[in-house]
Image (cartoon, rainbow, N blue to C red; front, side, top):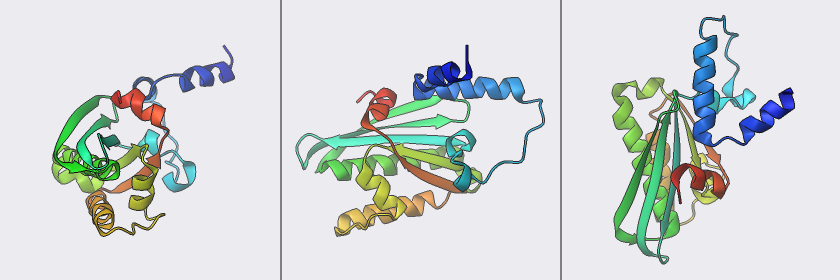
Length: 178
């Protein structure tokens, strides 16, 4: 098998399968000396070096309407915990996305407790609006969206580092099932 064929096979794996593969490779090569870590901002190596990955998705039936969300917390061993949410109040699709993201961040903070300041997190979602507003690349003009983006940044700021990554819808569906 060529290197190209191996890379294509890896690319065809699901997110969870890739994380499992990475975990197994770490076990195999744990005893070998490691090179100094690259600057994550330059290397694009965030996901491989992150302690946790959050994947979130929210939506509503109507806009606004009954709202729902799901998120996954993936640890550095590839273990996945998926949570399903149902919101009691009508929300827009974007509000449901934000509320799901906030629930995911809070759940991770509860999980790591006082270690949050030492934890590196990658956040992935298919809502370009939420990803871009929280990262500060897009302005949130509506006051409620601005408040939600500010709250997400404030909560994420408790971690050592975080990075927000937009992903295609099919990647979210593959991970969360909707």
